[in-house]
Image (tube, rainbow, N blue to C red):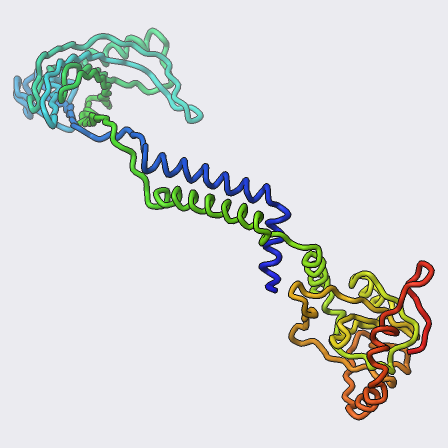
Length: 431
């Protein structure tokens, strides 16, 4: 009998409802996965880029010389310089240039609103502190029906000298402020119309600073500023699943159906039932393996057995006797029993037969085989200090067995199997 197979049968028999429930759940889950994967997979929405666009805003600037100097002639126009002089180039002129590109087509309306800002600010504790601020319109512009690749220009003019004079007036009115003065041009674009077949409305804000230091000013943040966008399309397609889900559904269904049928058929035919004898043998085997450190395999000679006998109902009880008396349990395979000899008393336990009907064989590698003779029993102990003793006196064993040839069977059937008397299982008799 395979103990592992027997344990599996016992587990199924003890948990039949649970096993059938697991099989049912496997069938339901597998059926759902199979149906939703192969029969009705459903649809999913895919989002893909259909078209794209991009735009560019750039500021070109310059200034016209207003006075005749030995260096610059009056009326001379200087363009895209890093610095300009307030005294001879007080007004800065330029233009914002806007262009866009599209993968398909487009027709846009471009609106621009420009504002000039003067303010006094200071950084304090990592935060910007604004003392005063003024805003006034600078220029507005609008262009319609702009096509992709077409460049639109919006002119701009800023009188830097006039703005700095306004700063002086404000500072004089306020009595001066500790912050630094900033001159800014704010440009706000609004783009609307049709782009790649779709209606859009986008707005962008760009800030261009004019740094003034004594008689010199320069532009910062002139671009180019680039913006991009994608236009997506959505479509519904049949959902597709990976190989794991594609195979998991049918496999779970098959396992659930086959497992459930096997359990029901085994229960009906009785192949899964575990008899009481099989349960007792499994319990005995588990106890044997648990306490095998206290058990040695050997044979106790008939002449070494004391006349006083106590038969115990479990191997656990016999191991307790061995532990309490500091002896070992002897597994005597010839008699198919376990025993412990303490002084003039033999404590025995008869293990249940294996389910196949054979005596149990539980010897593990490394166990000691013992032969207990009258010389061993003379000291009144089977094993002392937890150690094993092996006797190989073949002549003495042969003499004892020869002398008791006629009475051995009687001793094993009578004296070796004591009958319980008056509530205890101790009997006194001569073998």
